Length: 278
Image (cartoon, rainbow, N blue to C red; front, side):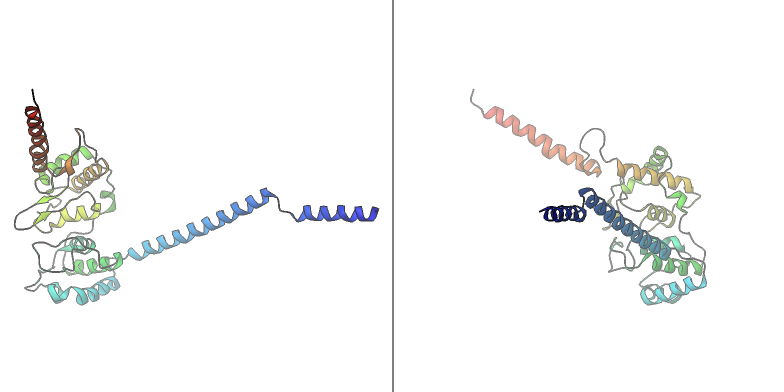
């Protein structure tokens, strides 16, 4: 009897030792999540660093220029000619600089899909590294505007001053809220609120489509940086004082709203009042 009791006690102790504590289970689960999250973060960081390193190329190296020349001959020479001297189908690129290539290729406007009043924005067909190589090749042909320094693209300038400069130089085409607008002969000034700061700066430097060129003698690099700051402010502060902004597309939309909705509602209310029996 005593032996049986002893065996039962030993079996209970063995089961207790074999049973895992709830705290141990939670600890193991937490450790597993931490290891999984850490591994995911390390892999993600590695991929981002690899992509950044791939896009950072030496614009002045002979290897980069040769790679860009090969890409140019395969994708651009049909319109712009061998050595970028131009053809009846495309202008010369001698002297347009790296900024022009980075803007046109980096926004998907080039290669041009078909003949149109102006080149539309479309999905980009080259990687950032390939775009940089094309820009390096064109820049090697003759001096031209360079890709802007990052310090002017941080949108940390004077937004009020930038908005004033924008109203004087840009709002007549791009709208005072940078929402874009129609031009003549099927052309248009695109909206700027979702455009990358680099491409806004490059457009001011190079004057694509109908846009005038704003060189550093017209607008200093800091002027351009302040304009970018003002556009970013308008993008981040879409709720305007005074009510619904109607897409910020200007007085035409506001006038139509008043005529159709405002006067329509007033006329309808007047008709309803007069139609009621006395």
